[in-house]
Length: 455
Image (cartoon, rainbow, N blue to C red; front, side, top):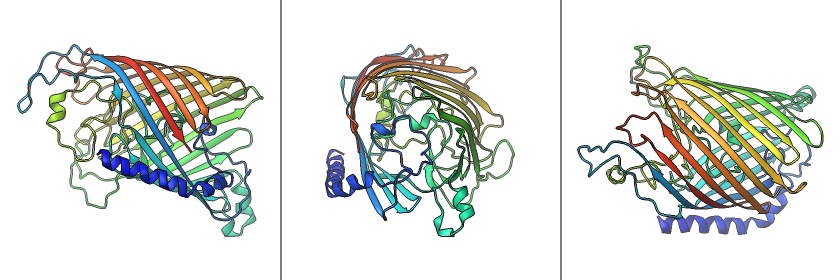
């Protein structure tokens, strides 16, 4: 692992050196692009402002690297439990030390293919969930269609953006603020939401932007993280028929406007729906893993698990996935307010879904609020923040709903627009889990330190 990781980081470093002249130049010539560094904070959809002149094919090689020190403690009140094939109490927690986690790194390739057309390819070079290199996905974005030689279409495209490919599912706004493997630059906290809605799916998303600040998006995907052409044989318990893969539909309606020099207002509503899938991962599609390591886990269970491509058997510590793999219908509302250096980001979410073996849908709800103050004025390279996040869900096989609550406070500093460091204090608790579940009475708390580079 160590040699493999060193090789990957060495390759990234060499690639970065090789492309330094091209990268610096391309940073100024990539159109309709979200910057990888501090300038990309609080950027959601890419702007329709045509501020960069096209000067031919351009390639930008970028990267992200993060390093985190974990100092967390944990406890639970689960009843001792033994299981055949395991040693000792499988409800006892792994003893933790204060130490560095496995670092993560991403490689980003952005290409200006033509005037108003760009391509993105992102690779996870090394991460907790996949130690070796994995392609996250890639897409092509059209903001102009000049090759059609139509003035009517040219006028339409002044308000329209089209994304096609294996791309982030644009459900809700929180995925624009989350950590993604080595890319932690946009997140004022160390971890993502408890219920982390993020996946890449093959499809297309169409955006319309009005000068008033109103915008809308409609999209269609195949509902899958890993596509397959293999015929299906499993029986859907709800329909009694052979399962089938249906398309997923998503949409977003919002308003985003800088009302004056001090105040920005953004509000959006989103939905995502699919009736039959069998392997949907909207709430579990992160191939990098949580930035909290080995929490609320048992060593005997870990030792009995053989995984060739993961650093541990449970890469999503601290998160809750309700397991809506067959059918899911979910809705999210987001509010973003920014007055000078003070910003608020809120989330309300309601989701219904089931697995292929269930005949009725279960429910999960999530609420979250971030309050962040960035300073000094006009530079905002320091911040202080607080997050409250709570999830209540009906899980398969459970007789009552469970709840997970988290509070997190953070302090951060951008040394430069490419280099960031932050410290977080987090407290998380698990409520209403059965006494035979390792999460019964579960709690963890402590301090996280993280440094991040993005270019």
